[in-house]
Image 1 (cartoon, one colour):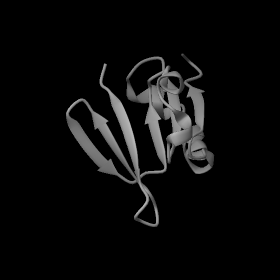
Image 2 (cartoon, one colour):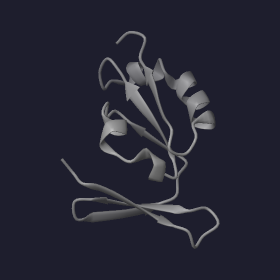
Image 3 (tube, one colour):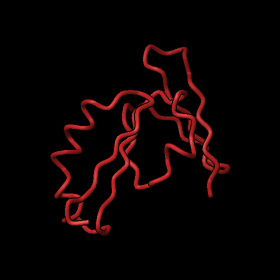
Image 4 (cartoon, helix red, strand yellow):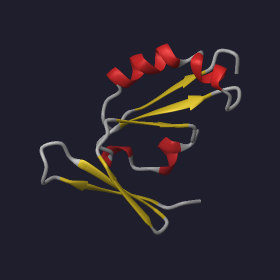
Length: 93
């Protein structure tokens, strides 16, 4: 399991997230993270996140599964708050 470390850069107007997975560092600015990790909120300190998280549960990894939830994803992306985790699922799951 990769180790997740998040540091907040407060030197810029919009804080950047620095994420470390094992030995790789990624630096990015984003408002929402989309994941299929069902245990995300139990594995991370949500209070420290500068972005919202959407947990997506689909029937499989094929495009029709994602297309069925695309409208809801667009809506959720607009309204999820930093540190908030919301879940959505494919109705045919």
